[in-house]
Length: 151
Image (cartoon, rainbow, N blue to C red):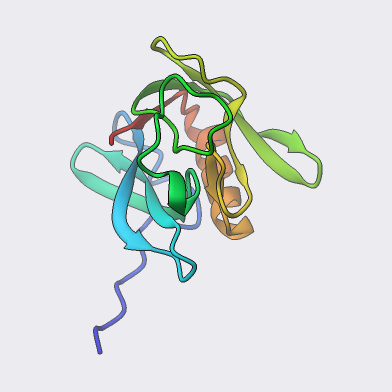
């Protein structure tokens, strides 16, 4: 049985020490791993240079639509298209949070964001309230304004 991985230093949110030291980069990428129901796990990662500070599991798109057109077919439950996005600050969304995502490239997709849900239907969906709260703390404290979807 594999040993549990040590917790990353920024997993639960920022500290004064972690907020020092240069630019932060927020990315997400589709992994080969799946949730128990078959939906692909997307890793949302926060880096400073080559140092990984935090990694959270998310979903984007439903299992059967992972290979669907991600750029030009709104409402098809495909994952978020690869590219750079302007990231909005977390704001109340019912009893949850919403982070607006504005693509910095041409696409017919709209109303994109990060929020807590599962499974995902096209946004970046965090199943865990603890994880989305940690991301919100980072976005607020570090003034993160960009998300890169890598694949």
